[in-house]
Image: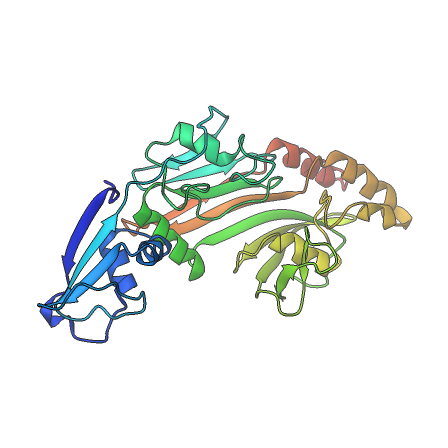
Length: 330
């Protein structure tokens, strides 16, 4: 059920005390709205409050949900999403009334952006899922987290405001576990290794990200899975979710993702000695960045059940990995 297109009238219980929970948090929990959407309603003066015979007033988001407070919230109908539902190939791993888990193919952009107004995961979701419009934003309905265009693998999608709010909060609290499989050039000095380096826009190339002083904190943990002559297969755990985080952190270690045209282009050509021919052959077999979201785990935002999903390497990455193993006679 949606909360859109209604005026909600609520009252804070008399035994709630004064100066306790913030009003925005109190309302978000009771109306199953995301905090972001509620803040927008406050900014649009669609929330008003009073105590007793006092006149109605527009509150601030930081006001307390004080005892006896009467509240009216005008939630307008969701604006139509300016997107077209498209019958695009989509692998739905799981779906219920609150969420869906998708195994995204490489080459698909997650949400519309300049240059990619259609053909995105969102366009496909609007076709395959119902009642998604308005959940989490007009151009990113249902999207809780994202994958780069050329990264494949698992994504969770919210189908209600309540689920979107809860899953977004769980991400911020680092309660959503995401494990990626990546092939990186060279060999790490140790395993496991945790990289804690801030990421921001590259000051010299604004379309790229980089490890920069003053960037947002980014933490990634790498663990060796398989060692090959000139590359390694790694399990990668994200503790934060910055743009291009895995790719930037591996490049900062001097071990870029195999096939990464932005942060590791032509890296294999710098190799010499006995591994040079192997590296060039392997690079020719990898058609895109070797990065796949292989495991996803979180608590269901409504039932609390622990949800776990796994996705094997897709054929375009599984085949070069098989070749790498066989080239070593294993």
